[in-house]
Image (cartoon, rainbow, N blue to C red; front, top):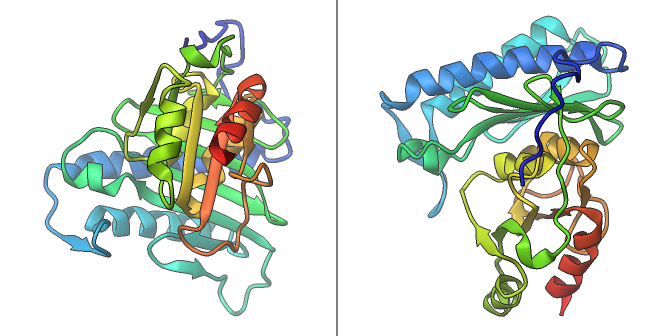
Length: 279
């Protein structure tokens, strides 16, 4: 069941956190990028194929440019790492800060290009290899999931957390499996939960675990740092246990593209899901 926010909880990002200014910047930027994506969706001109299964649109590029320009103006010493252009370093005359804004300008591009209303914008600040502030913006629903490493997970400024279900059999999970014996693992997991879903936007589906829209998120391979930097932090700060498929750290900034995996669930079910995946 989706957690209902307490109306007495704060409705603004807590400025007392160390990363409050960066989070406010990220939320504002996510609002702007999300508005751009919605405005462009019905009048796309260019859809390019990056691979047999992936596409990129002019909306990806325009959203990306918006963020790069904003970071350069507000935090000129910070780098940007994005799906489409890779790493953008500070200007040569500026001393680098060691901070990197990790962005997916449009997660769920195939959905977006086909008019399916399930996609998002994702932005996280990574310092010393660890996400410290992040936002996932669902512009269709007008919702922003956000968190800092020293603050709570929030949905539109209200503190959120999931209400874990007692039985794994009652859980609805987002699941994407691939590789050898994936069909066998799919059948095993399908029999252990209420139902698996696959919606085509990893960042948004992972963010959904923060307030229990999904009880768990599983994706084997095919994830990159920009897919999970913000959403993994948000889920973790909501109290969800997040790891890779082996039970280790879920985020590695310099991991190869599409090499990462994530298992996210309430603590009582996380270990069980890992065990089912390993059999």
